[in-house]
Image (cartoon, rainbow, N blue to C red):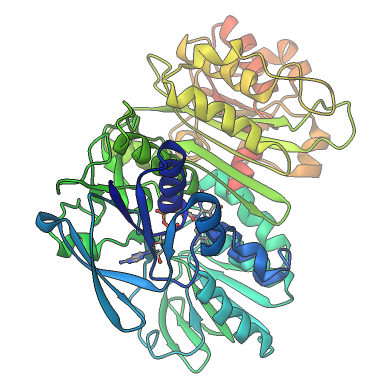
Length: 542
Ligand code: FAD
C-alpha cells in the first residue's frame, strides 16, 4: 500500500489529499500542518476584522475529524515537519514537543509562503505589530482591536494591505496606508492604480505613497517624510516569500527567490518529492521565466494535478500568467498577464490602449464607469496583459481576457468574442470588444497613440495639443495643460487654425471622440496622435 505524506494542509496540500482519495481508496494519506487549523480560508481573514464575515467558524472550511470521516485522511495539525531525508524517504515531525519520524513513498510539499518582514528598527520589539497570514494571526489582531484600538497603520499596499485598510476603516479605526512605491497595488500600472487610490482616500484612508517606515516605537511610526504617525495597531503586509527553508535544508533545489524548482509534473530535484502552491516557481507562459504566482486558484489546481501525476495520470502543469482581483470599498481592481513594469523588465516591446466603458448599457439605470487597459505586441497584436478598474463587472472583463491571454490570442480575436448581453448585464459592444477594436486600429496603423506620461514632454518638444471636448466639459471636469479647445463637431470647419507642419495630439474625455478627430485630421493630411485614455486617464494619473 502506497503512503503519501503531505506537508501543509491548506489550499494545495488539501486539494492534493482529497483528489488522491477520490482516485484511490488504497493509498494511505497523511497530512501534517504546523498550524492549529488545516483547510482554513486565508482569503477570508481581512473580512473577519471588520465583522463583514462575522463568525470565526466560517474561517474554517474543514475539520480533521470530518476529513477522516469523509475522505479517510489522517490529518495532523500542530505537527511541524523539521527535516526531510529524501534518500531514506523519511520526514521528521514535531508534535507537542514530541519528535516522530515517518516513512513515505511519495512526499508532497505545499508549505505556502510567509509574510516578508521589512527591516525596520523597533519592529521586532513592538507588541502592536502583526502579520495577517493565519487564524492565530487574526486572533491576535482581534484581541488587540478589542482592547479599543482607534488608529491603525498598514505597511504595504498590495492586495492584503488594501483589504486590511478597508476592513479596519469599516471597523471605525482611523487608518493610514504606507507604501514605499509610487502607487498602490504593484500588480497594476500606475494610472490604473491611481483610480483605486482615489476611491480608497475618499473613504477616509490616509495614503502615504513613496514613504518608508524608519522606526517603530511606543505606538509611533517614524516615517521617511519626516513625520510621526500614531498607530495603536500596525499590520505589515509588504508581500510574501516562499516558505522553503525546510526544502532548502533538505537539499531540494530552489530558485532565486527561494521558490522550489519543479518540472511540469511537480517533481522536485529529490526523488519522489513533489511540490505545489505558493512555494514553487512556475513557468510564466508569456516570458518563459520561472516565477512565483502566490495565489489560491493555482495552488488548488496544482494540488489536484499533483495527485493525478502521482496516480499515473498524464497531467502537466501548463504554467501561469497570473490573474488577480481585489476590492477597495466600492471599487474593484483586477489584472491578468504582464503589466508594463514586468514587460520592461523582461525587455519585451509593447503597446498599451486604454478605454473607459460602462459596466452595462448606458441607457439602462445603474451603470458605472469601467476603465480598461490592454497591453499587446505592437506588430503581431499578441496579448500580454489587461487591467480593469470599476465599481461593477471588472471581474467579468478580466476573466474573459485572462482566458484569451493564457491561450495566446491576439487583439484580432477580441472583436470576435460573443459575450452575453442584455441591458442590465453588458453592452452590445462590450468593453472587451471595444478595446479589441481600438487595439486592432493601432496594430493596423489606422490610429497612433501617445501615453498620458509622454504627452507633456511631447508638447514641450513642439507638439500641438487639441482638446475636442465641449467647453462646458472643460469647465466642469478640468482642462489639460497647454491644450487648444476645438469641439469635435466644429473641427472640420476650423481646420485652418491647425498647423500642418507640427505633430498634433488630440484628446477628449475618454478617447473615443478624439479617435474620430484623429481620423478626420489624418484624412486631411495632418500628422496626428490620439492621447490614449484621454482626459480621464491623464487626470487619474496627475
Ligand atoms: P497555504 O494555503 O498557505 O498552506 C500552507 C500550509 O503549510 C500552512 O498551513 C502552514 O502552516 C503549513 N506549513 C508550512 N511549513 C510547514 C512545515 N514545515 N510543517 C508543517 N506544516 C507546514 N489568493 C487569492 O488568489 N485571492 C485572494 O483573495 C487571496 N487573499 C488572501 C488573503 C490573505 C490574508 C492571505 C494570507 C492569502 C490570500 N491569498 C489569496 C493567497 C492564498 O491564500 C494562497 O495563495 C494559497 O493559500 C496558497 O496555498 P498553499 O497550499 O501553497 O499554501
